[in-house]
Image 1 (cartoon, rainbow, N blue to C red):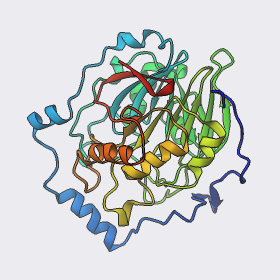
Image 2: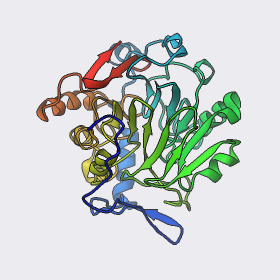
Image 3: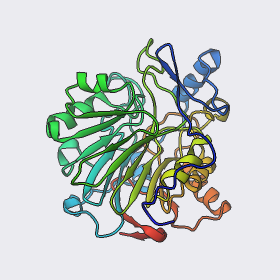
Length: 351
């Protein structure tokens, strides 16, 4: 199949989110609600009290160095391939085919409703919002605080204004507009939007298995989504937060192959509590295969302590699972904060 060919899905009807009484739901039997009972209280207490948090600066500088990015590389798109820089957690700076964009940008010190409490970064972002190159658009996967950050939205909007296009799942446009964002495109799963006639880009909201909540009363009043960014010559996939589900094979059949994908590999323990909403490294490799990614970068780790696995475990487990599932060493990788790489077709990497 040639790059850019849309073969559709010939096996079954495309998965759609449920919507009843103003709230969205997942359509798969792999979804179960996270328990909001005593078990969930015990889980959050364990996270808050665990002593294995990485807090030694000299250790972290060795295990998770933060590189100072050379943004002159973003003055022009790579002649071939997708340029990627990991900002941390689910935040990436991506450029290809003349377009530059961010995924789930979080530059704040804490991912919470206030900045004096909540999960604190143990690795800083490699740059500030003011240091970023010109950004054309931003993709938001859902409204959890570690993916949609008020302060970052305000800072990006202040700098770029109406020139910046925000792509959000259904139900989030009102929140974005209330924060001053002027150019917001709201899509449901499988909805497509032509970014502009001159760019030749098509943006598609696609399924993932997750949920939404920012306040005590707004559970699932907004949708969650993954994103396909389809350019004239290359394709990029951002999975957002997700558990493993049957939706990924549909995405691969309809829009793959992808030159590059960013897929979460962390925040997965304990599995009894998190399996439905966060993939582990083995399931991340399965997503990579399902969507027909030629290269993938592991995200959603190494930045905030949100769960119980050791902070370096996702990186180690990913390498083990990739080898176990027959991937080449360079096919699904992790990168340093601030590291810029160009990923090309045929599983080739350029520095």
